[in-house]
Length: 370
Ligand SMILES: [Zn+2]
View 1 (tube, rainbow, N blue to C red):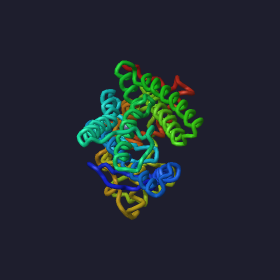
View 2 (view 1 turned 30 degrees about the horizontal axis):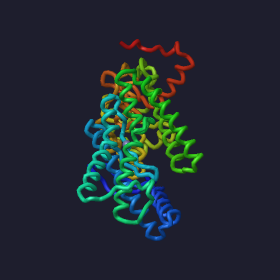
View 3 (view 1 turned 45 degrees about the vertical axis):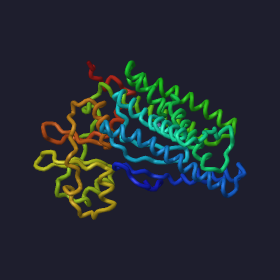
View 4 (view 1 turned 60 degrees about the vertical axis):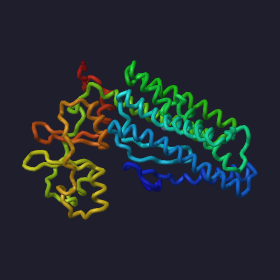
């Protein structure tokens, strides 16, 4: 990830600043300094206000992240973009109640902050004037008001049921408690895309550049996740047997990466490793690429391979296998039968099989699921 800069980390989660982030600071300085007529002081006010706003955004994303960690879902990183923050979870749990809690945890942080800030205002007799209607005066009190109101807006805005925003996730998970997961997702996706179009048009006609950006972000996010879920749903009833490749070289622990690189140049990406005919480890493409970039090509397969990758059986359900790959962040898994390696299953193989099955369904019968 070279497109972002690490700021610090919390409980192992890197908080990163996207390289486009300074744009929002420039925008804020311009907004308050030039358009608002505040001059240099106004520009400074804008930069401070937006920076504080992003502290709130970070806390919001940490809310999602801690809830995810609570359910054992790894959080890859939090990235701060000019249009807001994103907590990148390894996967979204498909237990509806877990997604429900994770989605609500972000806005819940803002609600808690609103109570805290409101209480502070009452305690110190600060007047909270709505900065959207009263205009900005460049004082500490105005800064406090500004942060208070934007914190509330953050909570309300995120709860709009435009999937994949928080409100949309709450909706999808609530629907999935009653309906089939695929059906629940497609309803949430349609609503999300519809709202994104309306929001985008509104932004376009009112010259609000950021609204258009956010609308595009929501629309493409909803589309992508909808397709992902559809892809998974289509896997139900198929087995590994129907999709895996049995034409893969099997490595030995004392092979060198030099040998492996030769295979990779010929299009093989993932390798099971066996000793005396039994499975001992797995070398997936990502791990190999990292090793080849850093280590020497004399390094052995034994020193590079993952020993903790549980293989799958040919009779395993493809839906479960694909799920496991995404949970473990792998794009392939070794296929083992009676202790012997028989091949590799990857996302590439699965997509290929689905393409074939769409053309010739009679050649790819589905196992009737209970
Ligand atoms: Zn959120």
